[in-house]
Image 1: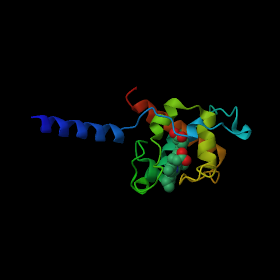
Image 2 (image 1 turned 60 degrees about the horizontal axis):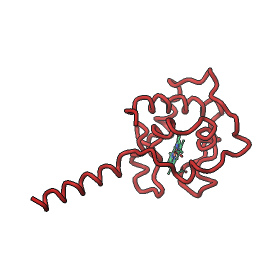
Image 3 (image 1 turned 180 degrees about the horizontal axis):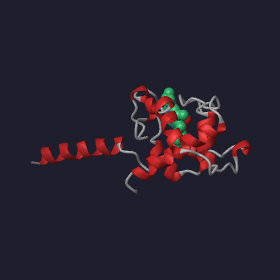
Image 4 (image 1 turned 60 degrees about the vertical axis):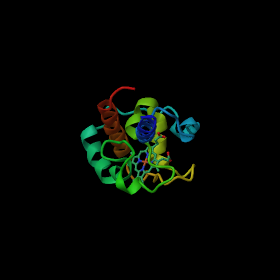
Length: 138
Ligand code: HEC
């Protein structure tokens, strides 16, 4: 009986590690560079267009629903962030900076997406907000 209970608890812990949490990463505590401060989502941004960009450029690592579980991200350390969660915690200027400059300042595998136009980056962020809204609230 005791042994069975112990195994149950271990299984429970393993699962809570895999579930996106509200924990902050070191990157999230970094200060947004002056260049990105005050950036706001343009009213013209399109979640529909963002969804296409997300499927093409982001889902491989961040997963279809933004939980950080895409196949290309499995071996990365640090792993892809559960960005459906990040959008609920972090402001758009932080997110826009992180999408634009990627992991360059931090030495992570997150690519820099300055190759996309500003409008495209905002469209992706607009779509990320819809992924965040699809998550149960914490
Ligand atoms: C090669 C895999 C890979 C791809 C493709 C990728 N990312 Fe990432 N991303 C990461 C990793 C790894 C991290 C965590 C490390 C970090 O924050 O730099 C991350 C972090 C982020 C963060 C910061 C989240 C936080 O909580 O701090 C955002 C926002 C983000 N990615 C958005 C995107 C978007 C949008 C795309 C597509 C345009 C994308 N990523 C494509 C690997 C990837």
